[in-house]
Length: 183
Image 1 (tube, helix red, strand yellow):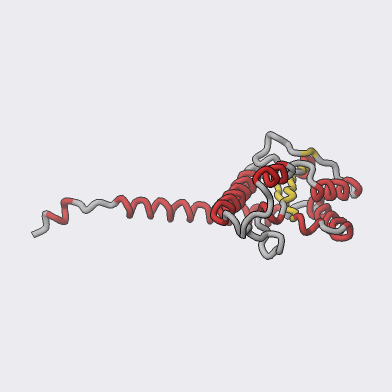
Image 2 (spheres, helix red, strand yellow):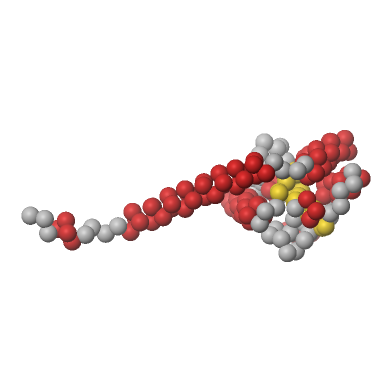
C-alpha cells in the first residue's frame, strides 16, 4: 500500500514525534507525584536515560510506546505495510537496545520497571497503573529473592558464555597431525 502523504508531509509528521515529555509519560508522572513519589527526569548518567529515576528506591521506570518498542499482544504494535524490511530492522534494533539497557541497569543494581503506553490510555487505567507501580517501587525487595534471582541470572549468563566459547572452539578445531601419524 502506497503512503497517502507526500514525503514532505511524512517528514513533518515524523518530526513531531517526541522522545521526552510524551502524553503517557506526563500522565504517569502526575499520578506518581500525586501519590507522593519524587523522581528525577531523564538522568543522563544512567544507561538509556530512563524516563523516571527514583534514587531513594534505586528504581528506574521507562514509559514505552507500544508501536516503537513492540509491546507483545498490543494492537498498536503493528508493522507498517510500506518499507516493511526497514521497519522490521528498526523495531528489532529498538527491542535489542531496550534489553541491553535493562541488563546494564540490573547489573548496576537498579530495579527496572516498564510501563506501556496502552496502560495509560484512560485516566482510570493510568491511576490504577500508577498505584500498583508506586506500591512496587516502595516495596522493600526480599533480599533472598534478589540474591537468588541475581545468582540465577549470573549462572545463566555463565552457561551462555561457556556455550558460546565451546562453539568457537569446535568451529576452529583443526585436525591434528597425530591422527595422521597413526598406522
